[in-house]
Image (cartoon, rainbow, N blue to C red; front, side, top):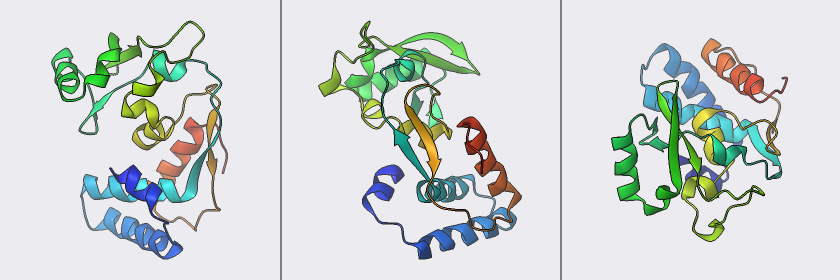
Length: 176
């Protein structure tokens, strides 16, 4: 929901500074994880962008986490509930558990790494790589897409924000 809002609206530098200072103040005053996540998403959309193109490696379809209410799906019953709400998720098959959550592969991925159900694919697939970057702060290496820096950073004094920026750069093999 936030991703669609941020894509459709031009985020002015006024709002960037507002979100940045709100983020800094929030770290020391407000202890809200929801607000922190919102501000971080605004910061990511403002300072990073997705470049490159699909190499048809199949990485995005062969080992992925699915989310329900911004949390990774951990059980088969959660997955079944997700499938009942959105029939397009029935193309995913859980195949193992990693880091406490289920990993899925898509049964629509062909041997040549194309989608056999491209016109009816789930929203998470339609929005890749943005969906993965917004939920996990990274994009699979060797998929063809990569995270790049849109603008030079403000002087960042917040240690929490510095850690998140460094994490994005490290996960995506970039340097500040």
